[in-house]
Length: 123
Length: 150
Image (tube, rainbow over all chains, first blue to last red; front, top):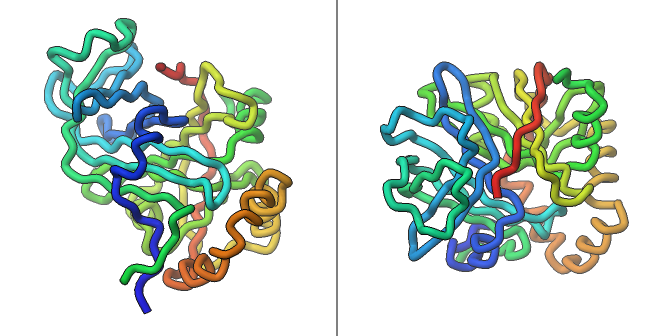
């Protein structure tokens, strides 16, 4: 018998990515861990992360981080994409992004996606 | 804010999925959506002993939790709770299990979702049987409201 998994290809969760009910980022800050809600946009294959201006994020250098967009409350509704990568200040973010936030491009190293409604046995 | 501030308690009551930020021993961050219930002011979250969040908590107990209060509608704010966590191996206590069941399986809206997926229940049993159960307990130390950027 194969392994039972909820893992899916990220491309099956485009609707979640376009309008995520929840979006957040975490990164280390000093000796602690930072976690904040973010504005999340995908534009022409690039991921853009908007964070409140009051929050210090790095010093212009890439910050290792994890971004999660997720949705659902109950078991078979839960779905999410987790990206691990680096947060870098956006030099030329898309013009439509909110000006009251500081914007970063998220450079993806890896991703994991799951959708519990698709629970299945791997062949 | 104090973790027992009425605003904090209200958001907790209306939240279903906690995003739990943890760090590995090497300092790598992780962010994991987890179900939770509150008992005696502590968070209890079911997971697997081998899950990244559990392994990180064992290495580094400081965690941050984000809660949306989604059952009350989309708010301008997200609650962040900071605290210290520990991992208990095995299933949660019956008291915690009962609260989990009432919140996530037996509430009317939850039961509707469960019934719609009845054909997958057996598969879910096999899914859970693949891992060793564990519980992450978080003792809150502080809380604050963060503006939700949109």
